[in-house]
Each structure stands twice: as structure tokens, then as C-alpha cells.
Length: 164
Image 1: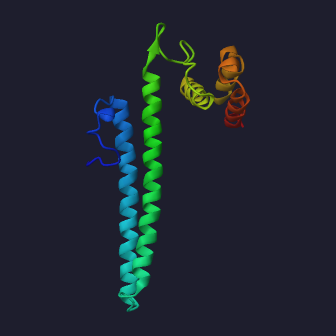
Image 2: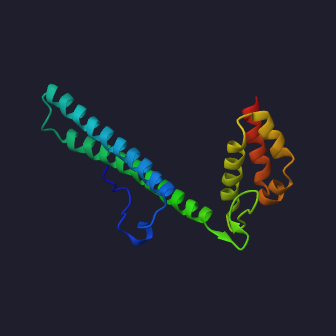
Image 3: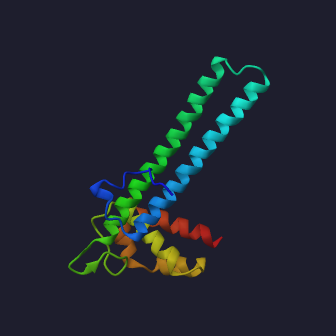
């Protein structure tokens, strides 16, 4: 697989961890899917116009530009999401004098509240597959109340929605 979603020669990305490389490969696969779909749409347009004897019309150029613009917008969203995931993963791999950051043993207070929300949500989603037990464990978690602030209720509602 050729990776061109980000420049891996950039010093910032030259020493990615295996988890981060998996993220890059997944994003590259999404990009390849978007690119293939755009090429397929342009091929269908070509044959449609050929069948209607309109191949030399300006419609083809205009529609191909639209398809390319839509594909590029989707690819840019994938790229931005990948960069965010890589940055988040890098934050999670760091630590302090108490060791690596990990909720609930050593929570990272340098994260924004929305990032903390993701950390705590991921923790509870991995703890157990029993939705009711997950909700009960979260309900009695006193650290989560102070760590998440106003996001505590949002995560509670989310976990409660899995119980129903």
C-alpha cells in the first residue's frame, strides 16, 4: 500500500508507533476508497455521455470537477481526522512522574474536557460488554465526576442509552 495521506518522510511522522501506523494505514484505505469511488463515478459519467452522444460537451468537464472537489473534501476530512488521532495518541503515550497517562490510575489533566470525555468513554467501553454493569461502575466513579466536569452527565446519558 502506498501511503500518501500524510508525508511519512516528515520528521514529525518518521517515528510513529505501531498503533499510529495502523491509524495511518486505516486512513489511507479510506482515502483509497474515496479515490476509487470518484474514478468510478467519472467512468460512469463518461459512458453515460458517450451513449447520449454528448461526450464533447462542457457537462463532462464540469461534472468531473464537481466529483473531484467532493472527493478532495472527503479526503481532507479523513486527513484532518488522522492528524487529530495521531496527536491524541501521542498525548496518551506520554506520562508524568507517576508513570504513563491512563485512566483511572493516572489521568491526564492536560487534556481538554472533550478529550477527557473520549478517554473515559473508551475506558468504560473496554471494561465490560455488559451495558448495565458499565453504567453502574460509571455511576459510582467519583473521579469521573471531577475529571469530566460538565461532560459527566453527557457520558452518563450515553452509557445509559446502551442499557435500553
